Image 1 (cartoon, rainbow, N blue to C red):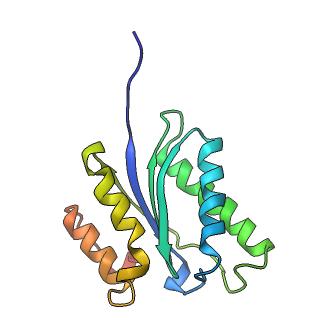
Image 2 (cartoon, helix red, strand yellow):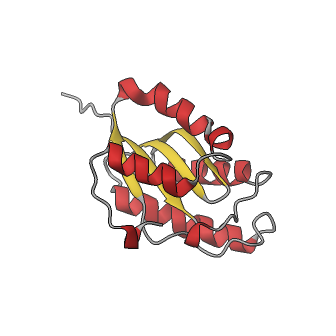
Length: 148
């Protein structure tokens, strides 16, 4: 008998202190780099998006990879790559934590469209307000001291 699974996760993390260090013209290269990291770990990327101070990822995480290891690998490798290159001159560090939510396959397209629309809604909605709303919608009690 074969093993069947689908482990979709919506992963969100910000730059340290929510600094605007992810310029509009350079994020596509960052997304491609993250996509390569995920492919190397046999994780399927459905969508990567974000704004100047944070990222959203919709990824089917391979069962051989823990979610924490995936996020840690993405953050460590992108930090090194961003600091070594010229595209992100003001980037210092990612926030220490992250948020991750499981997603049903039925919600996949809705979430892909939400991630695609990041550039459109963030001029009027701050990342912190978005983050609070996402945590609240998932029933997660938050401690404001630990918000990114």
